[in-house]
Image (cartoon, rainbow, N blue to C red; front, top):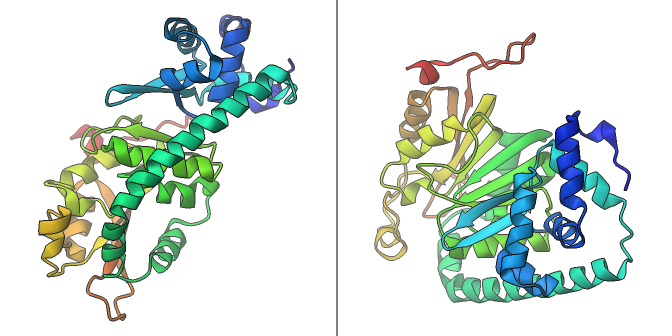
Length: 340
């Protein structure tokens, strides 16, 4: 299996050997090929491979230890996927050299399709049960297409190394942004919504999109890792929106931008009683102050569809990380929020 060294960083002899040894077994090679296509649980992998759970778990542990596969939890479940680092890129090049018509790989992909179909069935059932709620909310404000167009204009075309969507819900923001980034990550605290999002990003064929189960106040992502972070229609559910903004800022790269999409102040009280909204919108200054207090600069806001006859006005706020990269050393210079 040939690899393309121009696409990866230089690996040490030890790490190269570890990656090759990890692939040098039929089950592990099949696992790597499957996890290059989708995030999968141990149960799903045992179904696809037709092997026992202890055997599959043992091989997964070897792949994780070799730095090829990563494991993350969603409640009681654990999902596995190929990592993003150099060992995994090394492996992706090796997988690209495999014959796609090989009978074993074809059979695995067929069973993977069946697993994905079952996921989609479950996700569709959840969405169908809540469709009335979504329709009721959408009728209160300007069309989502207008909001999304305004958000994409504010974000810019990129390309970005990594984008992060907090409170990803159905994964719609990931679908919008993944094409502008090398990597797109969505975080949500609801396992049910993540199931919907996972089905949606698989239908869209977004292989660079990832999902994480986690708390918006304690994000399961790396610090200083993202060029763009979006918090779309989430803050009004939270007890402490400013805390969520501060936590998001820790994930921004130097010079990165944080964008918030939410409602301007309103008096639609049933959103609080029927839809668990903690806050009935935010003033422009309120979120700008929270962004500034979190250490960001150039905070600004704009309304979408404020001239339309709707009950709710959607506001987009944005601000950026003021830190710069040292051109000589490429080391982030500390900001006040880091040294305070």
